[in-house]
Image 1 (spheres, rainbow, N blue to C red):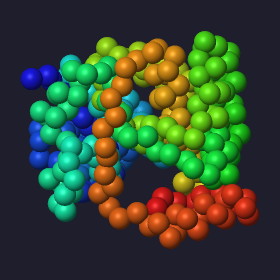
Image 2: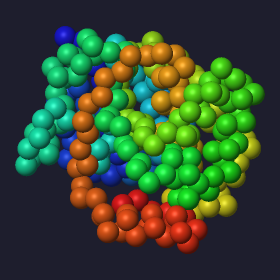
Image 3: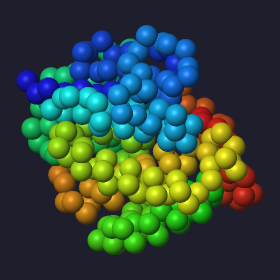
Image 4: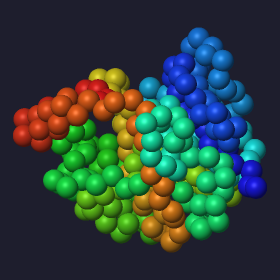
Length: 257
């Protein structure tokens, strides 16, 4: 059996998967009340950046401090699943299931999210402030020009592996995180998230969601998709209404759904 650790990023107390493959990590732990979970503020960390980097402060902590053969990321609100059922927590993917999937691929990713109405770029442009994303493209062009064609291809597509959810071998994670955080730290120097509301300020976390596929395409990695489940109910009416307001009235998103 492979040595697999999947961190479950959370900012609050929540019911967690029972399988010991999962490690709850309190993201943005620095200066906050102890929830009884592993904090992302121990060892080498960027915990204080959580308001802007979201779950990536947990990924950074895992990259720098977690010792396992395979490392992954899930969320308290979203988990990989291996079956359907009424009890969501009983459907969460087991270690045995993930072990077999990792025999088939370099990386495990969640099922693609499909955007039927518009491309990834225009969806981002309508719902978020697009200037940081455009700046990220410039950084990629300057520092990693071999990735630019895949960045442009991803922006023109209508689907993607979202939420920063993934599982991969530690050696591959090392390469990915070195590339990702190099781009994001440079982007941080050239942007000012404090000009946005709390939701929009999480821009580095949102932009990173769009970069994972870019990295996988350039490196020609074999991946396996695994279904995921939302542990809480999605507010579909609010989500749909917010999207229409963003697309046709220019009103950016101001919260999760």
